[in-house]
Length: 545
Ligand code: AMP
Image (cartoon, rainbow, N blue to C red; front, top):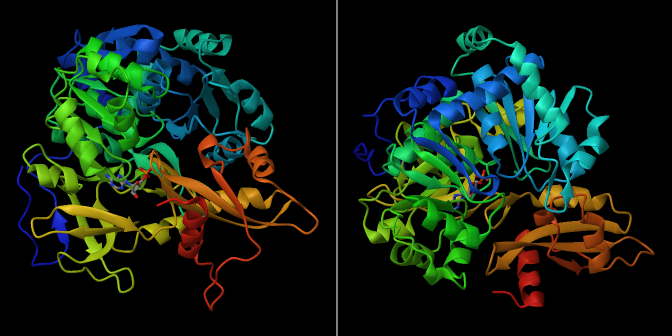
């Protein structure tokens, strides 16, 4: 694929269009794989001892789709999914797509405050969940918030009676009912809501259509050169686009095999899976690759089946990319850059790019996508080599934030450009480098965190009079959460009491790693808190660089 010629010398580029966009629903596209490769392995879930070919996977999806129909799930109803990586996750994803229900991805690390919010905001009718994950009792937490959600009529838990009943209910539904429902679907229908942490407090539900995510998954996989012979190791969480779009849809649109090493990331099980399943591709955020490379038994695993993979989610250090190429056999590894709101990928490096371009840029514009770098003050496209805000336009841009027209309008301008809040530079050849963020966001090990959301939560603590949250550098996770607390009068909160206030109520990754106390915060003359100064103060006090 050739990129179109540079438009003048401005930081504006359009992706190749020689391969057409897919104008199908997710299920029509999946059925295509079932017809073409019925006997090829479609899914391996190591921790559940599951290994199904495309025909078997299709049958299992059909059972769940019929169960959902029997439960009265209508076209456009929201079905929330709260689970670590398991086979049921994949079944719900493709079954909801088959019957046109909108799947709402719930972060497995969420706790009741966040769970209640997303179920209510999305108006979920059903929640399908694992009974528990690690120390988190999902059943108890669903019970805790259930009465606050008037729309929620069904809760089913994998491996329990409620799940069996859902499947049994489907036995009364015939194939025609599913065919009739499928005929009513349109590939521009929303099919997925993914809650993302932006800069403004509570998570927002990025609403994505079949067309958005099927095409993005397909073109990401094209960028990795997938065929039906590929076996893709997916240790990244499914609730995020990296897993369910770049992993699942990328694989099934090519008849490749999805291989899940574990419920959640564990470097040893990833390495063992790659070796024993002969995976050809491996995904991860940078911290995952670092953990794999540093595993004490790294050298004992045979990774020679690997050819490609994807590193994405936060800045990918050049050195880590080089090590992955050199020590993990991932000669064709690519870097992707994007965000949930753009399905997610906007740029990707190519196997043919030079080592320098492949390790120190996020690549060039994706097929059928338009990107530009704009001056954040004037919104004019800047010249090549100058920095500005990265913006994306095209098929991949979400429909909007679920029932939040004002927030949608603030993110996608009248000309259709999604403003990412990332600072980038485009070189003469169209390669993009992400150099920073204008948005006030913390990225800890690939997990986006809204400082405002943590501040709002800590404001509900009576020992806290005021609080400011910033990200500080961290060798392992890239960034860590640091809270500056001003204590309420006659209160003496401690680092521990603040952490205790968060524990089991909000997701573990949002709990401040550092808690510092301050009487005042640095302000501008207009009274705006200078977070960059707070960050400097924190680094000094904590001796971080
Ligand atoms: P999410 O919506 O969770 O996918 O997060 C999107 C954000 O992650 C982007 O706006 C970037 O700030 C960051 N990000 C994703 N991929 C990369 C990458 N390859 N390099 C640098 N930052 C990235």
